Length: 93
View 1 (cartoon, rainbow, N blue to C red):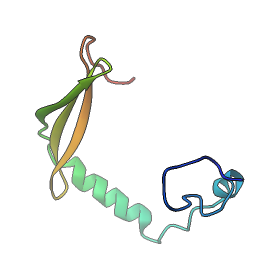
View 2 (view 1 turned 120 degrees about the horizontal axis):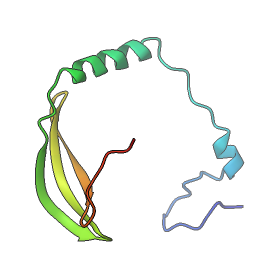
View 3 (view 1 turned 60 degrees about the horizontal axis):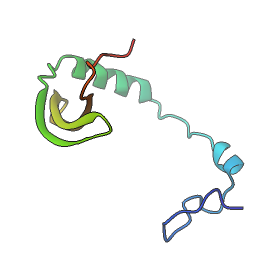
View 4 (view 1 turned 90 degrees about the vertical axis):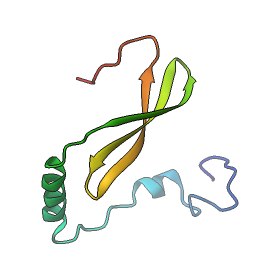
């Protein structure tokens, strides 16, 4: 039985049931997995982010969606930032 209807011209579940999909395990990590990501984090921690707020993309549902960029490994990374229009923004605790 399909999980849900979809607009795709292919079967995204590849004919598997929800239980089949939930029981697919992850492959073993490569031997240097932890060392690689620890080195990446250490390198990234040394880069000042220097965030830059970009253009307003849209306003909807009480929020502004803005472009933002920041320094990271290999240069700058672009992202979208969603901010409330009427309430002050705060970080999650």
